[in-house]
Image (tube, rainbow, N blue to C red):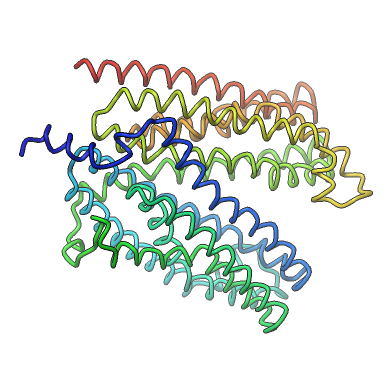
Length: 459
């Protein structure tokens, strides 16, 4: 069978290559959002349970352990995006066996790598606890937390792959169920372990190991279902260097973005402390930890909906559909984020009161700067969306540039320049400036990509 005929049959048999782009984008984004809403609710309730059940000690332990949580999320995205993107492109190209091979080898490679990482962290839990800043009173609790958490690490990473591959396999509901069910079960465990079983920090560590680790059990679908081509065999342990290299190359921008956001937050907090005070730092914690988190969740959902569609259609050489997807994705993300941002702008005071508590002098400051920050967030998050798109079509340079532009390329320089010109006001307004510049860069690169796609079609 010729390659052209194989591509045609593959496209005709999968909705990613046939159904209207706008409808697919909405469907996949919405299903991703449902799962992420469950995770967002889980995070809020987690704080309430830990704070009221374990008090300051529990919250301090969670704060110290968060770098390992972020590390897990970064690794999960790194492996999952690399494997799922490459598999989707092979599938779009009509190469089902190639897609299956990518999945099988990627799964084994990811599993072996994360087990090795988890073992090393488990063994060196003591020194790592000291590196994280554990005080003598908290040291033993942090070591226990780390070691229990490491039992869940491999399941967390495999869970990320299961969720991403479910979308590629046109089973986005599996991803939604994984994210929703894990949130419910993990919260039930956290409540029971803290208030009923009185397990203290050990129960909290079990929650962190299972909240995403439960996703990993959904990988069983790919082992036992007859409705998927993605199977794993022992032969997949014979790694193809090109496949593994491409997985690493595709996933690397995600790791870089995670690092850049961390650096940006450190710099911003330092400038808020230098030109403002504790109230400004506390206000940023509320705005960034809850308000912006929710807005970013919308873009993460639209990106999760866009990526499998982009990878498949690009691999299938359906370039008109990819061009339409870029336009629909940018427009849909702008509308969705701005609708929510406007609500936050209008209700800034009650929203901040919800998280801070009535009567605090922090409320008017947080509400004031909430309006500043959310005014252009939708524009800046376009860079995140387009970074995800370029990642999905293996344009690593563009993906990386857009992934770090809000934080490193525009964000940090804007803080330095505007803080020295306008003081604390400049620190806060540096964020809208960074968002506007990121939006302009995103549109330029999107226009260049559409032109490239046109040329590829006529070539």
